[in-house]
Image (tube, rainbow, N blue to C red; front, side, top):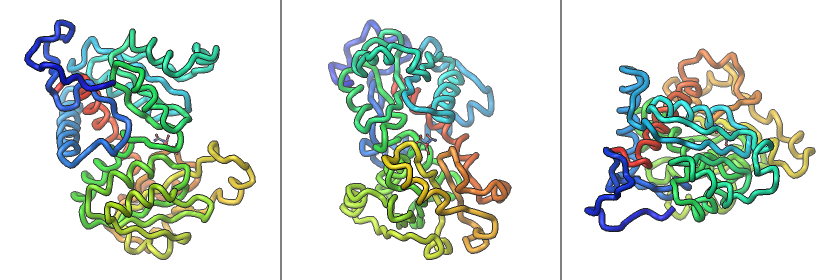
Length: 330
Ligand code: NCD
């Protein structure tokens, strides 16, 4: 939706008490990491810290009491949909879950704009996951309520990138100066497309390690290069593991392959094991957006460098912050 910039002194009679039209993210869509600057990130992460503190102290509280979120998922999800549900419920709001579009009017051929315009009659914010790149932007074009992109095909996954960055800050204490190595399916993995773009706000070095077939798309590499971020591509992890501060592992996105034989060629290309990780720094971290399908051995999970389950928890606080902010809380 377009942000309401009308006279802010004029009281909106439909705005419940305590909501702020002048709050920085009020009514905004979250479609791409490209919309954020440093000040935005500091603000969001400050709120995420407060959310963490409140969850520790009281568990659930009433900040979004009476608000309704629709979780509209056209693709499978465990973490993203349940973390948005948990985030909304921890803030006292409620959720309309639409995970099985097979059973909804979408199966009758309803268009995305019509589905959005219907669901926003019943809810204050819509979280959308959809297999087509650009679908969240399309939804936002038709919707009046904030749309949060929870993954649009191979395009972006901005809330994942925000929680990934928050994880790096919390775990490493800084982002500037770090060498971040992205490993696996860099072609189809939307989380790495968003994270690489978001990291251009910092002074980092990026390594991309993938099979030839799954290289980081040229347009993403160009965008990052235009921001003067040093980046290099490899097919072998050995070349960069010892210098890596953050190893961001991804799953090969089987469902996005046009040719199943290609999937067979690249599956199992890289596996993180305790033995391999003896070559890495002792103060680095290993991240993964999850789900994993064999690219990190379970034997590694007890290593303090394995940050992927902590990463999920940080995601709850970041998503609580985002929901509160787009709904006008400061
Ligand atoms: C990711 C996704 O959906 O893009 N999952 C997630 O949101 N945590 C990664 C994946 O599916 O591999």
